[in-house]
Amino acid sequence: MSGFVWNLISFVIAIGLLVTVHEFGHFWVARKNNVLVKRFSIGFGKAIYRWRDKQGTEFVIAMIPLGGYVRMLDERVDPVLPQHKGLSFNSKTVWQRMAIIAAGPIANFLFAILLLWGMYLIGVPNIKPMIGQVTAESIAAKAGVPANA
Image (tube, rainbow, N blue to C red; front, side):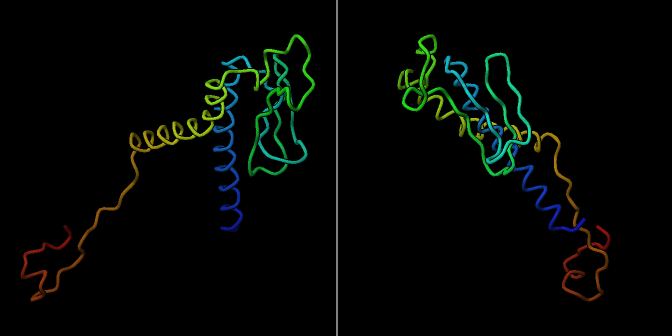
């Protein structure tokens, strides 16, 4: 496979992972604050794959993997059943709405810390600099630089 194709695949995987972590942050805090989440989508456009959980949230993987969204129940947009009146996003307190909105970027920040911590634990390969040969009467030889060190 060409380098361009590998770069494209790597890009799609990286963006997909970042979008998933970001949207999961919104989703998790919305659920913890008792907001009805209607859809959790990774990607835009036509759905490739979809399923529903026990709470009725539709999970979608869509055609264009350059973003995503979490659609919550909102009284300003959707007709709300009487039994769902307290489950809408806009019925929550300002602090709850701020927490839901901030959860996406915070999730990305924590994910970055986790990745950097993992890289620190595993380490990165490094190449030790070696001097193969020191020419006699050179500045390096006069300075006492040893060969093969």
